Image (cartoon, rainbow, N blue to C red; front, side, top):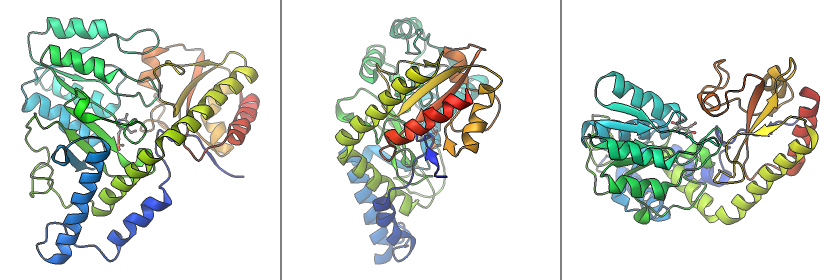
Length: 375
Ligand SMILES: Cc1ncc(COP(=O)(O)O)c(C=O)c1O
């Protein structure tokens, strides 16, 4: 039986063209970018060309792009720097951020480095912007606002421009975890009021273990990882050469295919919603799936029964990959902090289906058929 992979918000398959672009850097072109002889300089040139390409695609300056090991490191760097180097003594975040953010802000709070406030959420899981403004206006300390662009579990998207303008008004630093949107939406960073954004290659058919941090040229932070002078002294350690090449290639392909791929993937999401509504009684959807929402993610709640409680396990047995919550905690038994925060209904079980351009309506039909048996 063929596997059906509906967990693309967790990670995606590496694109064959990305692998092809990376291959020489595994084999013949393995020089260390820091070596001064020509073999090293060729690698350096490849890294800098990748940086230029990423910067161009996001409409940023190459000096604003730093390569990292992924979304987690990028968010840790930005949040910690905002507190330690940029004078933010009050962090404003939400309870439905990815753990890369939540655990970092909680660490800084418990360590006595910053106060921490959570903005209210509206019933559909969107951030309450009036409450955000109230928190900013009432703060006596300089604030860091850290709010994700798109939620990886329910797909809700933040109005990044509106939040950025509020941050500007109250002189706050703004970090947005854009791991689910870089490679899925066009970015125009020169015209977006944000200080830090993040990306991870494996979310858009690039390699794992490589990401980026955009740092707006107007903010100056200290290095998070100490050691050599890589990444212009900002992030020590020999560069993930093939990863960086793969990240840039994957972003190039994602940007070129955006119009076609996004409308196709959106049609899959809408089709799955329709089929589920038609075929499964009591089904409901979390977040704002047809409003401000990722086209890749569909969070579905089913009525809890003895059978449906085992749904993820049963989907797995039937070679269907989907997630109960965030990728990083699925498999663990604690449930999802996001679903708990927005839909704490003990009589429902929730599954996240997330799609990519390789999925088909026929796969959705098979999954819905299977779900009819399993619920
Ligand atoms: C929204 C979001 N932020 C951060 C991360 C962490 O990215 P990485 O695993 O590449 O460090 C993920 C990955 O699941 C994510 O979905």
